[in-house]
Image (cartoon, rainbow, N blue to C red):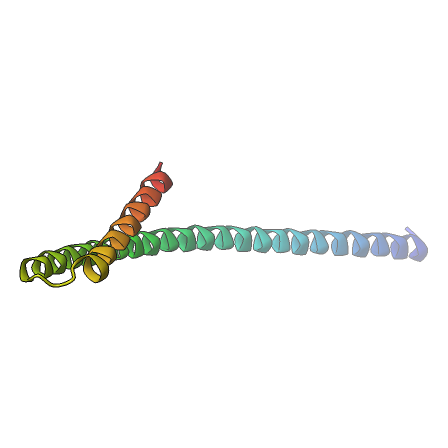
Length: 114
């Protein structure tokens, strides 16, 4: 083989080697990108799960608070009526507002679960 033929063979080999290396690099980049996409998907699942749990906790805490306010306002209205004080406007109205809010919250929570 002549030196010119060897030079062409060597040049072809270098081109082949570069393409092979670039293919490996591209494959590694694709693997890294796929791994990042999987990581982001897992992170999104964890974020949604945490948000769902915190939403349930907030709903239960709000429902408990509204139930307590309703109970306390009804109790105050009953005590005020037994003493002969005004019982309709402050305590009974607050109890009705809290009861409506509680029913609304529970209805929303039940519909959201379905």
